[in-house]
Length: 269
Image 1 (cartoon, one colour):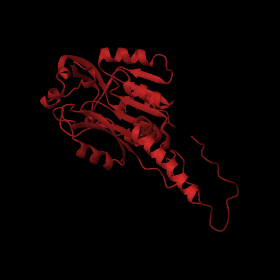
Image 2 (cartoon, one colour):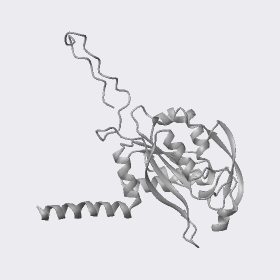
Image 3 (cartoon, one colour):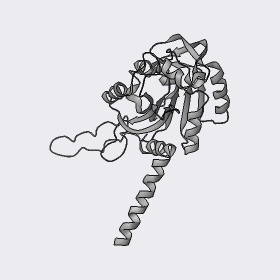
Image 4 (cartoon, helix red, strand yellow):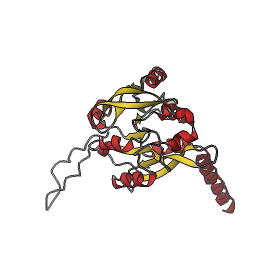
């Protein structure tokens, strides 16, 4: 008995250590647990996030949105050999139309918001090198083109401070979202961005629970963490499964006896 107990402790401890040291594996486990079948990769840049998902073993569909033309062309090439990965040259925001994006010397830091000196002080090469007019759409406007009725969706946001605007354009869509991965700033890096505490409070009011944090961006001179990624999901049912969509409640039999024939079951999705 003592030996089996010790073996169980070692086995569980090894699994905990594995996820502690491997953020991709931890993320993949969360996607498995919540049965994610589609990732909306908003602010995809050249496809780094999607490639990380594939390395971790995720085989579901990915739709990557990237507005900056030069980054999008690289993203398009990266996705070309993957039939379950689609690249879309589009920004998501609070309205449909056109918008101006400040293109950074490192395209990962390009934003529609003005970069603050605190950001440039850490890495001067992040500075703006130009501006670009891009197409913008609300998630509510494009969701139907990419999401199937049976999909369970993770919305990944890496939009350099524009997260509240993307969520504002997704009011009707959020009911279809099972999880959100969002960049969270511990210190302001873009003018007008929302900090970690109000952002988490906003998402929690929408019914999402924080379940993991991943390393984001730090000041290499001091080790101070500047950004992290938060993974939030809607809670599972008591049975440990994600709630199935579209299943009506079972009809009640009439008083005094059973129904004359069994009611048809809704098809499994």
